[in-house]
Length: 247
Image (cartoon, rainbow, N blue to C red; front, side, top):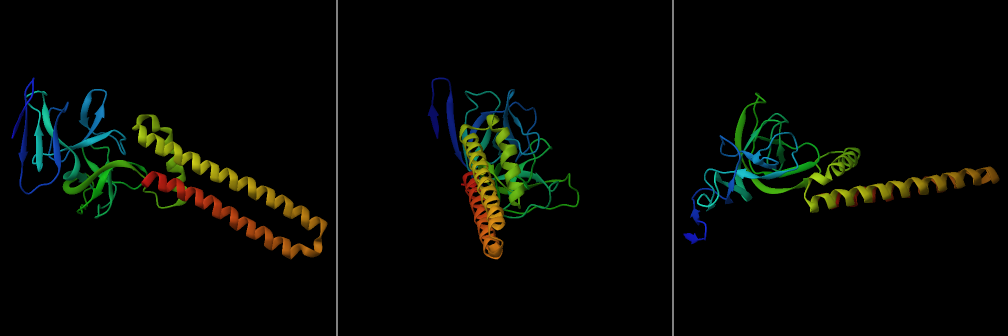
């Protein structure tokens, strides 16, 4: 099908044995390989460079299911997929990739890796890849869903990652920036309230023990309960901050 435009035409092709919707995009690269991850830069769209690059744009696909060809009106136009399932070049430099892992960018230009900490992810792996040679690159299927994720396995790691990613929020999209800043605000408020409440209850408990030594056991039990309540408040705040990032 050909759609006429003032400056050219747009062709839509349906391809077999693939999925994903591609739009013709000008890419400022001399050579591209099927599955290269692309990012926006000051020099235009190029292969992503650097781990957890926040400027992921899409994936170059040689054979997309649907290709909105813009070569007549956009120079150096190549098919780039922003949504759907697509083959992506990955390595095992960050560990074996299994189904369900988040895929992020890596230090190798255009190549993805398993995400093991928070940051912007390209999507979720639909197939597996592993190699003893950590520099070897293979193709796997990835369900594209470009968004910030938290992949840390500990609460401490999550909090530190939220703060770290929030510091680079100005380089992200407005929605991603809002998520990080809101998560940081919720985490800091919960921690502050928890410490303030615990400090007050601990001080009042010590003073009560001094005034009434005979009730030391009862007061100690009350302090323990207050400490548990404080931990619940802090954990609840951190959990809400986590949900803000992943939803």
